[in-house]
Amino acid sequence: MPLISHLPNTVGVGYKPQHLDDILANPGVVKWLEIHAENYMSAGGPPLAQLKRLAEIFPISCHGVGLSIGGERPLDKDHLDRLKHLISWLKPASFSEHLAWSTHEGGFLNDLLPVPYNMDTVKRVAQHVDQVQSTLGVQMLLENPSVYVAFAETTMDELTFINEIVARTGCGLLLDINNVFISGTNQDYSPEGYIANFPVEHIGELHLGGHIEDKDEQGAPLLIDSHNDKVVDPVWELLDRLLARTGPKPILVEWDNDIPDWSILEAEAQRATRALEAVS
Image (cartoon, rainbow, N blue to C red; front, side, top):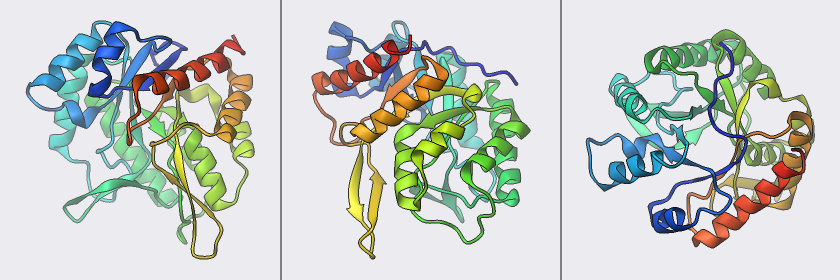
């Protein structure tokens, strides 16, 4: 399946309702918006009215957080049907989900948990991705996770795993650069090496975000993917390295917690725009 993404090679931000008036009055450099699919699966109400209004002005990236692509249980058919309905009327420029799981024994966990990298997981994730793409009728972008601990069952590195999924399903990739920095720091591998070897031909979207710095029980650095602060300089540097390989790509600035004033979020978008302009 060829890479299909209709997002422009510009900068978007995650949409938050408190920014609606600012976005409509003066979006600045922001050219597209991301929404979390699960927030818009209702039959109506103000959120859907806002989204329909915004979709008339901006390309929309639809980002799922609840499919549990990496989970051991089958995908939730009702959830997938509601997602299909949303995709059918919204017609987003891009649809993405996480390489993660959030379901267990009938329950739903409010977190995105990583998976062990082995052939059993490859087969399960590939089956789920195929099911999503065939049900929705669109190509899915799969996002690399933030990883905190390694699994004993892991038999391959993350890039090998991701390449296997792409080869089996034809999905595209969403490269979260903050997640690369988090996982590399936590797992003691080179984020620069990861970026240098990432299969860039499959990238449909890039993500930037903030994180929390902590320490583990041994006093080693432990980074937590929190989306509640500005992008740190090492992540900007990784972005520059990647764009030097790829040229301009759609870039999203995520800020999902401790939401700042619009001016602060738009300033982050300005910095991402300058990074794009440097390789245009």
